[in-house]
Amino acid sequence: MVNIDKLLQDALIIWATVDPIGTLAIFTGLTSGLDAAQRRRTAIRAVAYATAVLLGAIVVGQLLLTAMGIRLISFQLGGGIILFLFGLQMIFGSALSSGEKEPGHDLAVFPLAIPATATPGAILAVILLTDNSLYTIPTQAVTAAVTIAVMVVTLILLLLSTQIMRVLGQGGASILTRIMGMILAAFSVELVMDALGAERWLAVVS
Image (cartoon, rainbow, N blue to C red; front, side, top):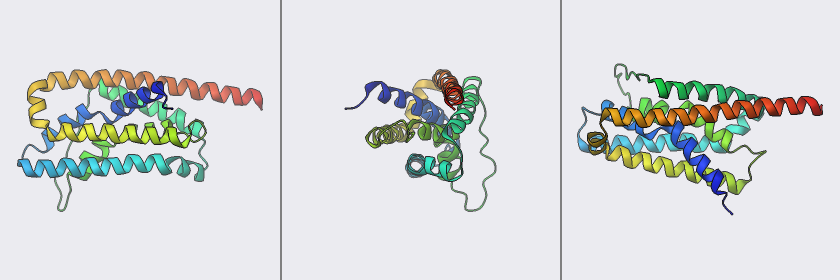
């Protein structure tokens, strides 16, 4: 049976870290010189690449940490700090510089897929939300499905970018991004507190 609370938590966290609204604003600015067909192809490729990265993190992320001898508690603590900084960045705003285009540069890969869509925060979040020691395979599969659903919504937003930004405006997009940043900052504090609490409990037991 699906845990509704976990489902909603995953959806909010993944939405906040992927930040489709912020990605929409970035996509609109970076693809302003492309025609409609090029924008559509770029949106599809960017979301496909980002989805592959996030699903790969779900499948092998924790295995890589184990192979490197990194405890998930340590990763959770470090990830919580990084997610907090990422949330502050969303709240107070930051500019993503596209830089000069180099020969053969694929806009769909950088910066649209990484780091605009599959953000460092999103990669950390999906690994923590599918902790093998806490969640069963079916539960992790639900988290993966939520991730795919968020990416599908992101793709739809990118395909409708021109119309949506015309309605929201830069002000509306900015407000929604900051709300998601506040949610992400609160979640990151919970991660740090949980990690510190688990570490104290292990110290008492040992």
